[in-house]
Length: 177
Image (cartoon, rainbow, N blue to C red; front, side):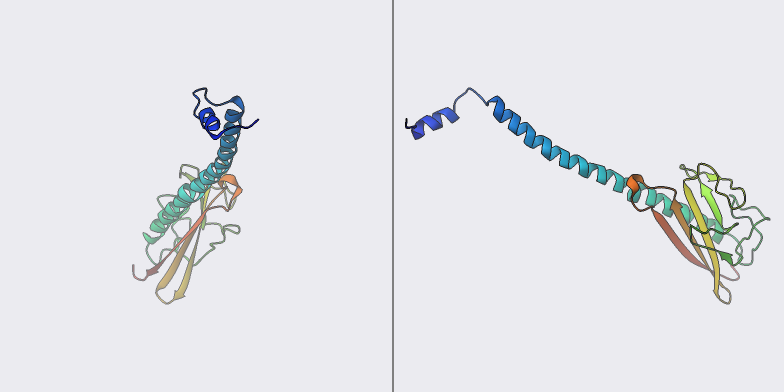
């Protein structure tokens, strides 16, 4: 039996619609494409949370601590900067010391914030329960009448197990300011 070209064209232009098999194949192709896009949306959401939100917050909180430290007088070696506003006694002020290594923080040169950015009270060098942001700072004296202040802020955990967002800011303070 020989099928003519005109019969094929008539069949394709027929108003009968698509068959169930054609619809199933189209849905399967669409499902595979959507599954690939869903994986990408999960990655995009994690990156947005880590780099767009958490990294921005670590920078903001590091800058906040830097402003608090820069507000102290150059020779202040007694203000407690682990509280806000800084108390007049019981701390290290701008005394040389501290560390920017978040894994090895130095007492009196570290504080903790909750997920909303509220300051938490630490007991000694023990991190308080529920901390989400950790700020550590270091004061160095690279030359006469000059102090370098470095603040690093890190997040307790990231979204999706990727690298934990961290920000570091540094500034110089000179005497007599």
